Image 1 (cartoon, rainbow, N blue to C red):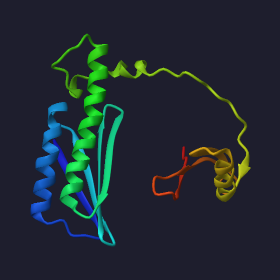
Image 2 (image 1 turned 135 degrees about the horizontal axis):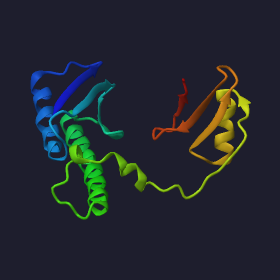
Image 3 (image 1 turned 135 degrees about the vertical axis):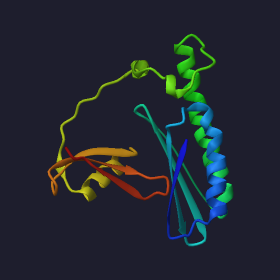
Length: 173
């Protein structure tokens, strides 16, 4: 397992990097050695944020934590990732006859078939601005809204973030 650490607005010392690598190593039981964990550290006022992302066979495992103590945040992120992977591993084991020795390196490509779409909804994309889309989303009391951005002439998604701000997903092709 390779851990790539990037930092914004803070200097990650060797002790911090070593701690991150040791803690992330606990997750190696799920993977083969060629997995890359991307970790981003950032400081905002008197809070530190840690984000970790692992991509494996089309799946993305991601966790983040914001706290006053970066070391506490590392523990929280590792715990969140471990929980995600454990849940997913259990699903895969059930599908593959309770193979207890399963690791993600053995994960077959056809796992995606397990996902079941239970409802399909069609709607006409309305050209609008981002502000109009946010207003529409709020009126519908949804946490996301798909629209045709009249400024870029592309399909976009606005969404409500955990911090009560808004995010915008822009598509490219």
